[in-house]
Length: 395
Image (cartoon, rainbow, N blue to C red):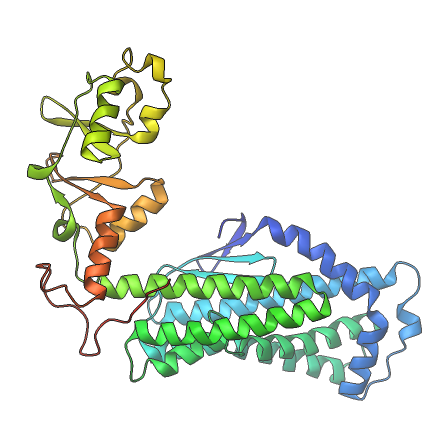
């Protein structure tokens, strides 16, 4: 998740996503308009005697709302540091922590697959929130705070406890969903545990979305949608990683001896004719046996039909060719395709020679073969544990 970098703490970049800049004033306004209700809640929960009338005059409610909203997001940031610092103790690196519309996200460079480590990391955030809630409560009860400060401290005490409790609900990839996956992974493959946790998370997201509709609450509806999409996405990525474990680009690429190539002086019209007859939408471009570019159907279509005899492949080809080496992991190749926004990669050896081509279609075909248990017949050797690979049909 991209954002505006505001600093680094313990080696972890901290970012603000643009949606945070929208939701912060919204939260400040919502809290400010409900100061009376929150005062009543604090008084009931903690046996206090805050005077709502003293806190609702003029612009004061919105000042309190702003302070409470800022404190809440700082609490969320500390919650994410709980996850991140615990993960770093296990040797995982953290790409960033980002505050955004629905709170905070800690981006791990690698998802823990050891269930004990994931369980510890998952509960660390809610533990931090509970500690913040308890410390705020102690400050609220132990000190004679001004009413304005007491309101903010009491609010943060309650909200941190609520934050911890809500995050422990089984809505994968929320903390509770990750705890569920960790417990399921004790006697299942990590991929299978992820699938089950994701399905439970979908049910939770559906119920949460239904509640949001009944309450006409767009934030709750948006959160439910995020949980559903994020859980399904991580489940799919986990299953892909399990399927392609130990599979290299060399295992599934189209080798150089079978490649169809074009030269830079081939006309765009001739290229289009070859694409039609050979059913290919992309070709490596070779000049004197060296890879100089890649040309796709989209490149050819950028030339008007009446001008295609006058233009050559060299005029429209992409010269900044995305490539991988034969020994690269297959899933790394897919990640490179996604990062570069391309459908195929040139496979080059250490000397820069073209030795093959790997496409998104090659990867998905290999995945379908592996999923159906046909990896041995495809010449790719054994994969995974004795539980086999999970089915992901319909995803």
